[in-house]
Length: 368
Image 1 (spheres, rainbow, N blue to C red):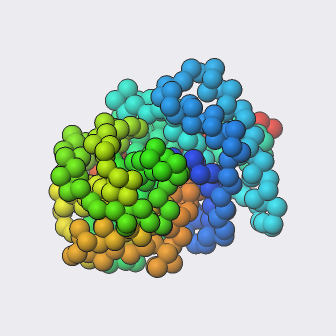
Image 2: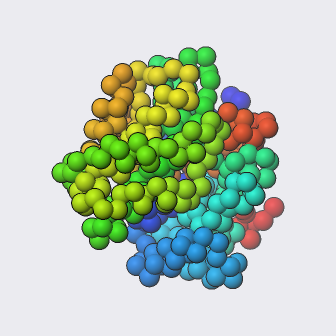
Image 3: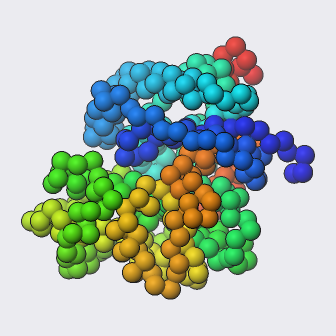
């Protein structure tokens, strides 16, 4: 594939924390990432955030309700796009877009996400690739994870075995072996369970800098009980659906706020450590950590304590933008779709064969 042209691709990603929409602009040919231009986050208007949160709470909202909010949401994305590209001289060739996940049922091959990709393509006059996860579901996969090809690209020269862990709302583990093996799956728990605890018990969106957790005491018995979850014992490929740990979070009731924060943070670190030890062929010398969890030093401290054999390295320490990596993934995958290269594999989503993912939406005036 030496004749592939590198192009400018914009990733747009909506995280589960509802802290805003992230934009990341890169140049890539779908195999290598040649340049990262810039990244930016646009905060949701408060009323839009409330509407999206209510959709998620409904689990499976009506099509009419989802469509109504999608119109407002897509306009917000398009307006943010116009502002983002104001100081960028080059043409943006393609957008890779993924909205908020409202409902996800891997067994029944259904995922509902915010946003209207066709309306976004029309508004931005830029071809847009979306529905990456639905494409995988349609081909017999579990719809996630979709990021391993990107991690393979940015770590091509790194010593193997190597593990990437992206700690967002959930935690995603990706393993690369010495012989080219690739395994990837959701660890199943991440920032979302910590954030929900803090909202309920401290009226805070998150445990900022892990200050509550570091001031509390971990209840080891509760952590061990929380780890007795069927998902954590399940072998890959697997993907975590929304709310699978809600019942386990009830065990935190009765603890002080700080002790609860410490215990739930330890649970996140323990679940990652447990699955690394149980489900990958060989522990690596280095684990690269990205996502919002990197900004919680208590979580990283707990993770290092549980994995003393491994060097835990925040992505920024090796020149990667840990906060925007997931958004860069969408930009990267959009280009792979344009060039008809696979994004999911039997060892990542359980799809039967390496599968091309995503659907291309062309602006109406240039529809093909």
